[in-house]
Length: 568
Image: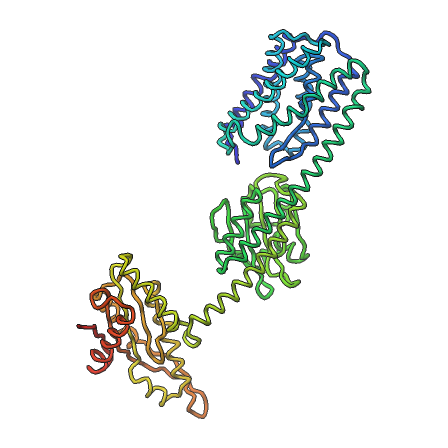
């Protein structure tokens, strides 16, 4: 989520006004009496190391540094503890890859750490805690209060920050809060033991507790990372199954981009197809909006897609400085992190997939393999959809005219008629067309010429009707048009316009009866019968019969090249 410049300036102002003066005030309120510098350096080093190695559990990032700041507070008070926590922000900023452009994040963490240290520390001191005491009851009681206040204050400040910046969050008692309090329960005994061991055995306590704790943290971190990889793999498998269930190329592309955007912090995504060695954009989305991008193959060769095209190898960039020189003109200026992988099937590159985020270091190396796997699922699903569409097309389309066939017409007419009966459609009209004297055309020019006319007429009908209705070849030289929500009057007007258009349009044919093929222009006429439901009938087959009756009795018998309506 982008933070507005105004909010960033507000964070800077709050930090300048609060943190320096607050540290000064805290020093005078809780001045440390005596400091053992080697011990304090040991505390500081342990806090910095612990902060640098966070880990994720169930999607929540944990920094288990509470036990160390508890021990520091018990020994030296709130001021020293707050200084150590300010120093711990340095490795935190490094781990979060905070740069100058988002330095406000480091300032906010500095402000939050200070407020947490000050509020919890001052509160416990006001309750009567004596810094450096060895009274076990006071240590446990005030240590527990300090830790609870510390965690609670952290959540309050973070909650208001998320509300201020309008970022999504789970509420005050969400999953993150539960894990933080669980971490507190685990680390509290370590903090008490560290404080007491330092007092009784000295610096060796850092080894006795610090090393085992860091090893435990490292192992949990490894386990957490492996769980994240497994979770992403499981999610990729689910996406693969969903892609396989889609039978439309457009649906597959939409689902593919949508699911990856939910899986990763993606702001921009591009599918680039490769057809006969040329690259072009198949689908592009920027900030969840479909966009049209036009770049030549030569321009794409000079982009990040071109690098993948030439090397047939996935690439990952963590920030804009690493890739901007490649000349990726199609990527927005605020893009930072990029993953680009080849889309391959059967050892052949068929496309390139590019995703980008406005955040630096948004993607991890292992995610290259995840995206590559998803691209394989995507390529296979697209190929499957093509086969299915071809099979459906062959079963529903006329091989010659490419219009719908009688089988599809019968199904669609039943659906539309049910819509009329259910009230979803007001009316349903049907045009039955027949080419006049078609047999004489075949006899004069040959059957291939007749086929040319059928094909040409199909294209003309598609052009004139557009999405107004469903066009089908009924058989031979007969065509049918289904017109949902067309009255009989509207249908008669449309039919007359079609008749006039066809009569005035010459069709190009190639005669196959001469010694040499000759190109000729032939004019044809058609007769049209019109029937409408529910006024003429309430049955699909009756609608066809009525239109057919109007065609032959009202148009053909009356001289052809005319439009006739069904009359009861």
